Amino acid sequence: MVLLFTAGVTLLKIVEAKVIVCSPGRNFVTLKIITDQGIYGLGDATLNGREKAVVSYLEDYLCPALIGRDPQRIEDIWQFFYRGAYWRGGPVGMTALAAIDVALWDIKAKQAELPLYQLLGGRSRDGIMAYTHATGQDIDSTLDELARAVEQGYKAVRVQCGIPGIASTYGVPKNGKSYEPADADLPHECSWSTEKYLNYIPQLFEAARKQFGDELHLLHDVHHRLTPIEAARLGKEVEPFHLFWLEDCATAENQQSWKLIREHTTTPLAVGEVFNSIHCCRELIQNQLIDYIRSTITHAGGITHMRRIADLAALYHVRTGFHGATDLSPITMGAALHFDYWVPNFGIQEHMPHSEQMEQVFSHHYHFEGGYFTPGEAPGHGVDIDEKLAAKFPYKRACLPVNRLEDGTLWNW
Ligand code: KDG
Ligand code: MG
Image (tube, rainbow, N blue to C red; front, side, top):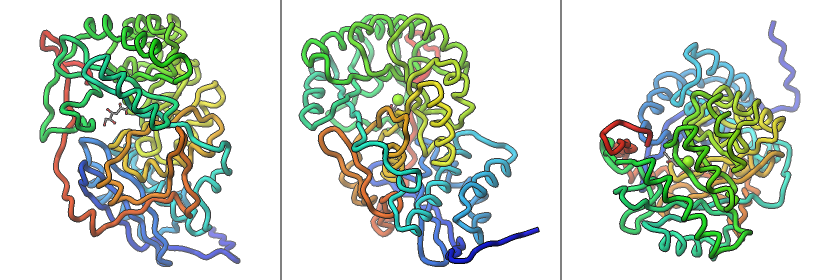
């Protein structure tokens, strides 16, 4: 039985879904869904270092099945592709699904002539606190970068520095360039020493607090390199410098293993940029093993799924802290900021600025001032793509590095 009550509603139909791949300084995959009324929506489908896998997933399987569908049925389309895959979940599938979901929310908000946050429930705050990165080869140069970030108005800064005796360290750029880790045609190998890192890093935070006082929020990303007991040690040792959070201090496939970290430290814990569904963080949240969930719209099934994660998190005092590195395109940043403006249990938003060239390809309405973002009032998520300009920057394969311990054992990068 099909009942249709459509009085007063303009029905839309999807007539085209195309994937745009470009590389204005780094690779981005964008999905454009076009309707018969001319309204279109954009979603980000970038999965750093595995871009073409998502392109194929979309072009070969999902885009053809979108044609003729009603774009207003966001939930039904989400369920269709999630359940309908049979092989559900995973980073490739959930990134593709997220791109569709965000593009459909963009269409719905444009049709309503409202900024996206209004459809989610309106804004819960005046501004969205964002953190940026300060990195240097050593403590002094890192503190100089921290001073620069403070001058730019940031109230929160992620601090990373080179470790004596380790040739290259996560997050630390070489030659003063901005940090883009997917920098080689095939993965290049870095080396890692947990001992050297653990012995050094507390000194960075001691120096930062000495110079900048207590008010500035300081964050740190371990990038999954420690075991739980090592993470517990680090959390304990940096307690006097009261970090805003310690991020990805260990891997979390075994969610229960975080109990060990939690039992030993009051340093707030954040994790989840590599998660792609609520099931990757359900036990972490329900057992209150974390304080911030880092999963974001583009890799965790879009606004539709991220809303479920945020609502679960709210029950357990866990707040959001969306991943916002440059490998998430301005479209994700735009959509994330609308979500952040609304979500009641908002924590913080990462901001790693895109280059001028990237922002020429992706124009946007979001705005940063005095440490806070606003998403803008344009209908939809407020980010557009200049397709002609994008075509001038062809895709170039770029892989993330891998890590080996000093004895040659492969480790987490
Ligand atoms: O593609 C990998 C990056 O997104 C990641 O290294 C950035 O860890 C990151 C962060 O916190 O921004
Ligand atoms: Mg991170």
